[in-house]
Image 1: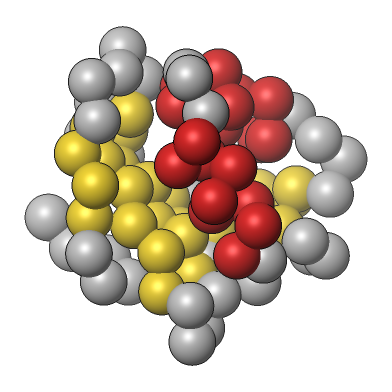
Image 2: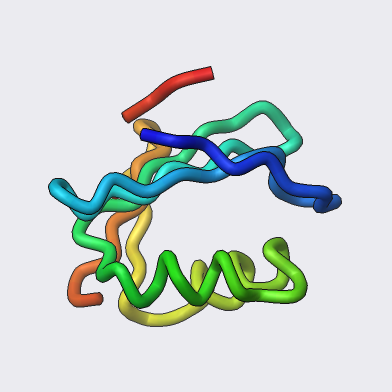
Length: 84
């Protein structure tokens, strides 16, 4: 998985693996979240977003996303590899 580093107050880097539809996001806080079953269109929208942090914040607040604490793995039900 190729990671894209970004200039963001919220996100350090992110990457996408098309075969498994996994989106990996490394936040500036040091937390790493992986999102499963993410359509390629969501990844492409994140790539194109002017503000990556705002895009992720809006995405994480949609009803389609549920968090399974304490694993920090968030799942996007219908429309998620760890590395550093």
